[in-house]
Length: 206
Image 1 (tube, rainbow, N blue to C red):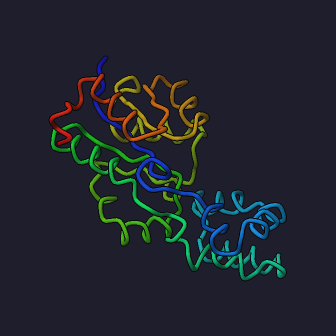
Image 2: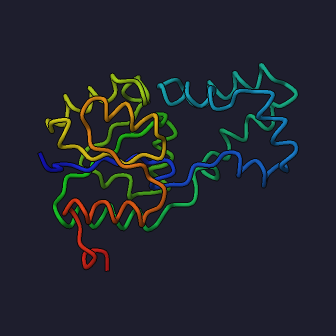
């Protein structure tokens, strides 16, 4: 079966997500390394992505780590500075697919409140035909359940979905269910794949 819908991850596909880079600039590389060694910040963020309250999780972590409380709170107070900048060419690809009347979905590990912040800052996040946001779903990639939930909701057979993500483990889980997958490394590589699938043309991107 050919591709019937295209599925985008968001972080590092449409919006850069590099917390380490943000903290390197904010507090310096040496202190950032010590900070990330002292606290499992990605595990903290996973709780938000699973649907727990953003501010509550960050404040709890700050209170549990008083020596790093100010740095932890930056994860909340300056979150939008971590989720930046937009990968403009990827947004152009998204819009070109929509002009070509290809259904376009989002499937992303994202908190409930952080996604609301993202939508306010980046209105293109409202342009998907369907959005599958882990915080609302209560499960994160690469748990097989999240892919099953997408399939059940969208009505597209697994082999009709083409999914771009920057993390191989997320793609492996999707492929295990029969999805077509693409490891996102550059927007150009993603565009080339979509052209090869007959979903876009070079002219559509100009």
